Length: 382
Image (cartoon, rainbow, N blue to C red; front, side, top):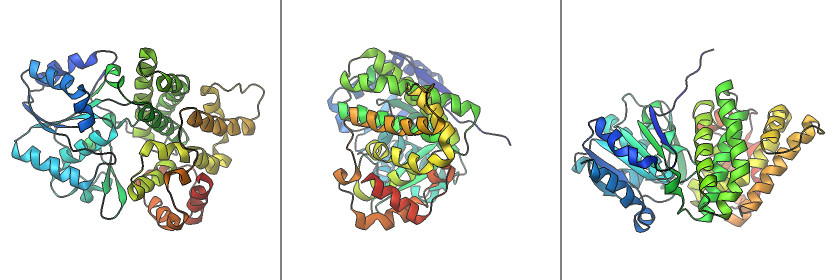
């Protein structure tokens, strides 16, 4: 069986790599960008750092700052109108997953037409998207380098997963200097999101030696540096290593897929408008407990990367330690202990479970679940 491996043609990484972005964009002959971002990043002056780089390289741009957490169809439509009105020939996203996902949807629709609902599922588009440059400010979602695009249908209260090779960005920029201003809560939630990506990719049915290597290194780095990045947001080493970790986790799940953590978390985010990384963090140990009977050896590998001494443990004991260590790290970075704290209601479990089973992310979970299984996971996570 052959495999495909997706990532951007060019990624800029490391401290102060942003300065190289302008000449790289200019060399592609791109003239006018639609910048997609949010007001917070404008207010703290981060967006200006990027527009200064564009100005220095005579690259024109227009701004859309209406992105909210869990980007919606309305945001996609609003920013698409701006792109058309101003004849932009490429898109730049500045932020975390919300900005990048909105930008991917806009870039895809610019060349393929229709509405983003038309592309829910896997590889539904026919044409390459408009060129997209993603400038990342969080160490978590890896949306800056993946073919995944998650958009909330606000009327149906669901998140749509668009998994499409044509939304692959042409350039991803991960400068840890841009991540210094991120608050503790966002650092924690996005870091646990990255850990979820790495673990789900490692136990995925579509894992390969290449994705395994990326996933295990990401787990090791996150286990070592996430707590430090949360404790001290100005810790340059922790920020840089978390930037590498989230990218590696992205390389892993972009090509190996995810699992039921994401399939369920998407429903919680769409239904209650909850932060994605927090939902993932709460669900991660419970889904791995569900998977454990057939993923013990993989969880044993993960235990070693999380710093657990496995020399005196059986595979069963080490797999339990892995699940416990996920909970311990989550608690250390102040993630809520259960879904009840987030306002999730048991009366909604049936519809949440039904929608989770339709989510494309569940296709590569190592153990197939029934509706009742998903409900039991939700109950355990309360």
